[in-house]
Length: 136
Image 1 (spheres, one colour):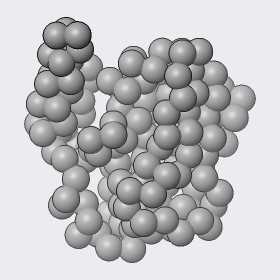
Image 2 (cartoon, one colour):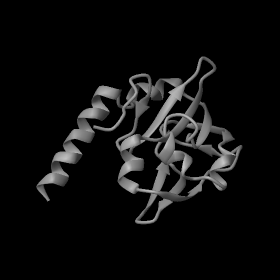
Image 3 (cartoon, one colour):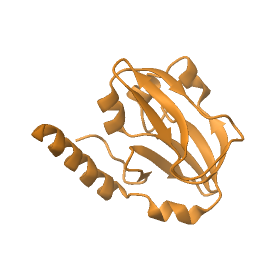
Image 4 (cartoon, one colour):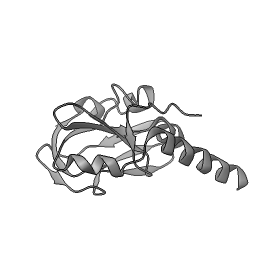
């Protein structure tokens, strides 16, 4: 089972968000997602100042075997990006919940977080996904 920190909220598309006390959310992709993608070779991040709605595409990560869109878990303005990913996208593989974060967003509606999956919900989804893969 992949690492699923309890202090984060998740999207069914495998993004996570950690909210600080100033309603700034740090966004990345889950350990499960980076494992499924394999070795990442490219990460496209949004531009600072971009305003997005929950569910909007905000970037792309590419591995040697696939590309995957990154979606905004909440609405708001992009206030920071992980510039290190341009030269070292593998940071996402090495530390998906730490140094491998992708961007930070200032939440326009903090209540949107309540609609996101808890760690328990996300773990259940991952287990179901893995069971479905085993059936194939």
